Length: 306
Image 1 (cartoon, rainbow, N blue to C red):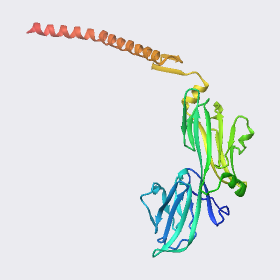
Image 2: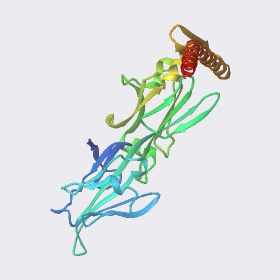
Image 3: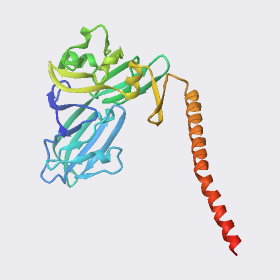
Image 4: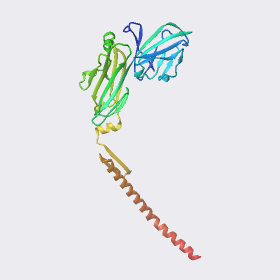
C-alpha cells in the first residue's frame, strides 16, 4: 500500500510540497509539471549530506543508484519509493526536458522521514537495534526508543515548531500521552533536531504492548511510528516460573529437574540410557540362549546319523 501525506508550506518562501512518511512505508512523490508519456521527465535527489544525483532521466530509471530496486515511475510521472528508510529524506525535484531544453518550472518536494531507533540494556548485557517495528526483548531490560524526524529544509527544529506547528508525542495504544505516567522518562528534542526519546524498564505485563510516536502539524496527524514489545516464549516463561527441564524415555519413568546444572542433567540422562541398553542386551541373551542350545542338539544328531 502506497501512503501519501503532503502539505504545501511557506517555510521556504515558495510553494514546495512537504511529504511526511514513516520509515518502512511506501510513498509517492507527485510531479505536477509532467508532460504526457513521461519521456521528458527527470527526477533528481539531494540532501545536506550528499550531492545531487539523477534518479530518473528522460523517463528511464538510473541503475547505478543504491535505491534503484525501490524506485518506480507512475503513469502520471510521480516517483514511487518502496520501504522508505531514514536515508531517503531530502530534496526531490521533478523537471521536464525536450531536446535538452527545460519545459516549465521545477516541481519541488521535501521528503521528511520519521524513524525510531531502539537501544536495550540490562544488568548483564546491552544491545541495540535500529528496527522501528519489533524487537525481541525480555522483562527487566531498560528500553530507550528514540524517534527522530529526518529533514533537509535548512531550518532548525525550533523554526519548524514555531512557524509550522510541528510536534512529536509518545502515546500508548489508547492515544494517551505517556508524559502523564511517571514510569516513562520522556525527553524532547533540542533546538536543532526534531526528536523525542522514551525510556522505561520493561515489566512482565508489557509483552505485546504497543507505543506510538506521533508527528503532528498544527494538531493534525501527519504520520506515526509504532513499536511493539515482543517477548520470546523462553523469556516470558523464565520471568514468571522456575525453569523445569523434563526428559522422558518411558512414560512410566519421568524425571523432572528444577533449575539444575545442565552438566548434571546430561550425566543423569546418559546413565539412564546406558541402563536401558544393558537391560535390552540381557533380555536378548536370555531369550536367545535356549534357541542356540536347541540348534546345537539338532546339529549333533544329524552328524551322528551320518
